[in-house]
Picture 1 (cartoon, helix red, strand yellow):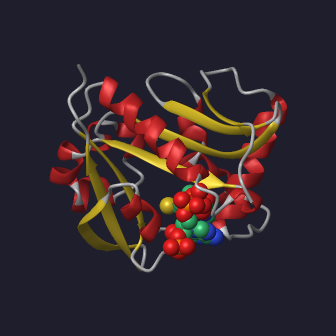
Picture 2 (picture 1 turned 45 degrees about the horizontal axis):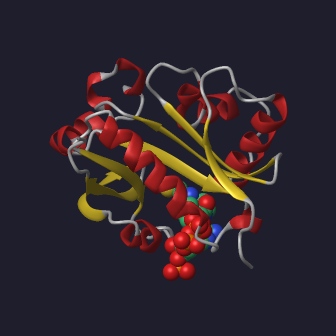
Picture 3 (picture 1 turned 30 degrees about the vertical axis):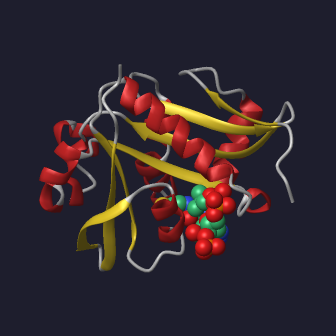
Length: 185
Ligand SMILES: CC(C)(COP(=O)(O)OP(=O)(O)OC[C@H]1O[C@@H](n2cnc3c(N)ncnc32)[C@H](O)[C@@H]1OP(=O)(O)O)[C@@H](O)C(=O)NCCC(=O)NCCS
């Protein structure tokens, strides 16, 4: 299936409509593959991997939008080194295992597509839009952290990332995938 009429749009703090927010939230939880019992765990999970990026500042929110109102997927990212930001202290692998790599590849991102929009090359458009933003902001590189066995690794490699680090975090094998960025003009 070809993606027709699909646009990548950057959304600034406070500009996500309620309908867009709801779709992003649905995509986020579907992609997590987790179900949560009632309680604070769900909110902590959402805050860690999504919520903190939606408050503006220098963070980037990109939506892939089909037509005028269908959110196909999103990318959220931070442009500066996470080891230098107390808000990321809850993700211990940054400072514990990847401090030097974070200096080299400081921008980082989280990307998820709705199931119906996967395998249609939508993801690469979001990645390239973030790469341009990060490069314009002066970041020398960007990274993602994912599971060592994750299916998405082949996608990231096609997008120009290489595995430059690995560790065990919360009992799972994870990898640090970095991509250098050109200096902006
Ligand atoms: C990973 C993802 C952003 C890639 O975007 P995409 O537009 O589907 O990617 P492309 O069409 O260019 O390439 C397809 C690749 O996406 C990845 N992919 C597709 N479906 C996937 C799924 N359900 N779970 C994980 N990765 C998937 C695979 O790497 C696939 O390549 P392969 O067929 O060689 O295995 C998107 O598939 C997705 O949101 N997957 C589920 C959630 C996820 O893994 N998010 C990243 C968390 S680190």
